[in-house]
Image (cartoon, rainbow over all chains, first blue to last red; front, side):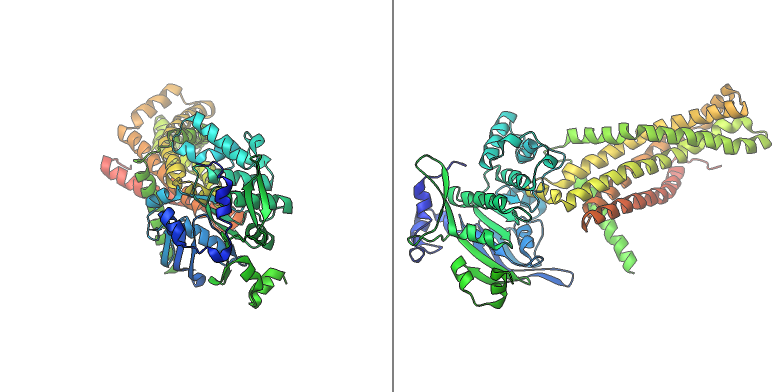
Length: 301
Length: 256
């Protein structure tokens, strides 16, 4: 299930923007399930005491799409991810995962939904008492999978994040970037089709941050994974919305810039301000906006 | 009013935690090995401090009461006075307080750290219910091990009393043993076992609740650890009074 797709799949996602609409009829006929968004927020409100965290938030994440959520700290970005996982419940509104309304699901019902969602936490959130192997194998151990199968899967995931050598290490022996990558490997176990990234590059040096973004791009373009990427770093937005992953003739994954003949349509930006969505659209539109709040964010002053 | 609301809210949260952990026992996966690991940590790990506490409590009881008993020519009741005090009250309560200090704080700090480092969220995101994986094994281990620790503390307390009685006051050891044997009843022993069962539940649920409701980063972990030990110790002492009253009336134990 986690195999690399051929180039045709990637090329298909790079069709000129004008020719492709999110609910393109032909796509729908070929793969009807793609019509249903992977994640959908409908007028979601959430407050903690008198503090409004989300104020009528609505957006959708299509299949194979990455939604980059931007906004200042405390603006409701991480809360949005926690709502998707059912770690928090909204005061009103609806949250749908694969068309299934999970708003009022109990903790037991949510356990089933969480099986199809992977989550990468800000600091990795690795279990301190478990080795890298046991951290990545956690979900499989809980499901009582045979140990031989578990080991194969863990090695495959660690290879994907290029951390096979760290398999026997404990989390406190890893650098910040390695912890995030182990966190990504752990989130990918079970091949979830939806992944949440909660500021995965916060506090990392630029090359390591770039590596994390490349992993997100690989998942988007080669694995058809839908994701929400919460960040407040514009460099991440640039990587995610202007580069795509493909496989060259030697079978190696390479990253290329979108050019004049193609435009990535599978990454969109959602900008939060005080719990409200003030922008939703492509990177080009985002950078062309005249909104002073967004301009301040883009320019960093 | 605000305090009352806060108290009722905490009580509700702790009750919900116990219920969730209890019903979690009937669903798979079951965390048997984690429960055994906790039993080892709680039981074997706490044995030395509980034994020391029991031994010296027995010793000091004789040290303080023997002169009075001697004044009333009741030296032959020395064993009974120590055994009754220890088995009925001091064994269960002191063991619970020692375990609360050692284990309650550790549970609260561990779970609190997991909360602030998002490990609990990660656990839930990976499809595991923390109430079943973390709370239930700790409560069960405490409920199982605390009565055993109490029995060990009782024995060491009685032995400690005997050593001080014969060593310091030259009381005949046989007289002491006879007094202990005829002084304690089956009801005392049953009561002394029932109490730590409840104390284990109190320490486990309060510590887990305080740990899981940690907020405010590392400072919050320290705060919830302190609160956990203070609250569970106070609840143990208060609950001990009502439990003693209930046990006395159920088993018709005379308090004189």
